[in-house]
View 1 (cartoon, rainbow, N blue to C red):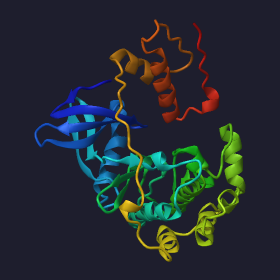
View 2: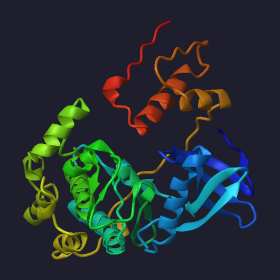
View 3: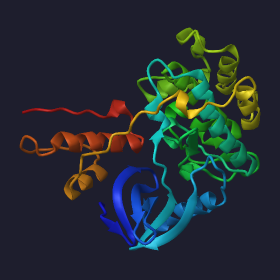
View 4: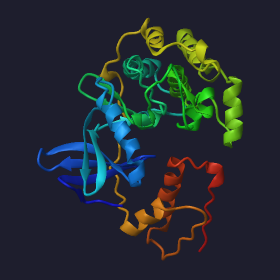
Length: 335
């Protein structure tokens, strides 16, 4: 559903959607302050999951974790009110040639600082990926925040076994079977750092079965084969993180020490962030309804310029967010 307002909040933009709900950028009209609203679209019996996420977020207080403010029922919707970060995602920094090593280490060090805190408080993330790392540039530094602990769960007896959750190319071997512990998050960090340095993920395949086999094998091209300039200590850290055996991977605290031992902090003026373009596409209620309920075969008819391509583009993006593999999506156009 599209919203113009939600209680006292004026909806400014739709930021994305996930397993638990849609996320909107909104302005509190009483405080004149912007927040991110995560609005549940679950059935009543499923709302407990979002309440669990709220309790989890409320327990986390760290400068590198997106801040949780409140949970509320607004217009019969369960809504999380969280910090809005005006910046970019790590995904938008990645280039096919990789990015500067010092900047990579600076960003990942802040993510690891958040993980050290979370892991020592018995909390896992379970869905670390570039899209869940937000970066905002201030006058003299980069502010890095980890978001979307929506798939996180409290650790029980050292590890948890639950339904498979996460994004496939960033999922540790054991995560494919629903087994997670702190070392699963570390594997994800290794995959992210590899991609930052080289411009490509360590494992790619045309289908999930082949991807899983590659990840299980633990065999990949070491970063310096793709980018010879990468320092040896950084490569060693990446390779260790991507070990197929969880016990061989470092803890978040050890990895943080490994990455920062020989380096100084990065100043903001050394690098520039890409400018995020303001979205100019406004979807109609009918388009949004079609996108949210896309399944099976869909036929889109209309005159030239009416929004057919826009609807299909957003529908494909929504299917990917829901975990549908690209190999299962086919678009045919005709005139």
